[in-house]
Length: 328
Image (tube, rainbow, N blue to C red; front, side, top):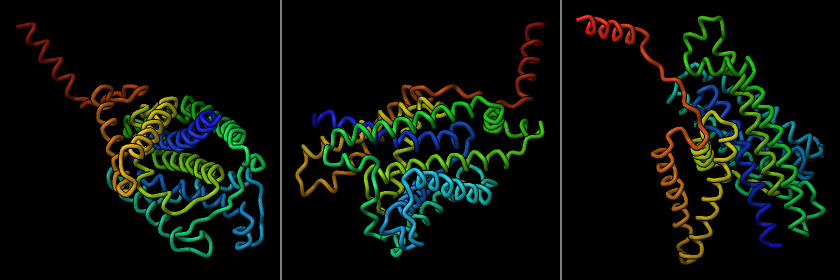
């Protein structure tokens, strides 16, 4: 029974990570937007839902005590709006400049959560967040299985919706912008308009993941949204296969299994007083696995092969040269 309950808890946690990875896959895998501020949007969703649905915290902003589902919807709206505003301000930047800017946004969000103690609880975090099926909390097995069912339904709905978007004309425009922006713009497509939309939808999905995690655990704190979270999700996407929604889910399950498993091994092998320092070895283990995956499967487990950009003038010249050589 204990093993089954832990399995349900483990799978639910991995699926919540997969929801974050799906949002990142829309931004990077489909659109090519290098977002390393993922932890900030997850935090926005988590705090939004927690503040609106936790009675003691809701009283600080007007006394509302909203249902959990309403908190999840609000988390998507607020995180999506924050992502849209970030996109409008930053998507003119390219590659590493965009990465630096989005990282700065995540740091700002984390610092606000750390210092706005009257609203977010500051370094002490927010506790007693209402949990779905809270009446089953005294029976861990049933509680974890019930929450696993809720998380699985949400992830499945998000997966189907994102798959539909990826295969729609809107998704094909995003892929065209990722592969050859100049060609897409020449066909009358607004690169900025589509990218802001993709960034906002991806941010909304990340915010929903943060809200699910907050209500599943029942406690959040600023230290939950450090850059390590962004690193984890990026590794999950790369391992599973950038550009593949199914790969994003598979990568999340695999990487979380290694992350959780390595933590258990370290706890068993290393003395208690040294475990805090040894925790960094989890990141080393994930890094080694990432290197192995990239060596054996550069596009990830289920990643597709992207079309390589070539100089349009190179191939005709080479062909002409080869033709002249044959004639000679």
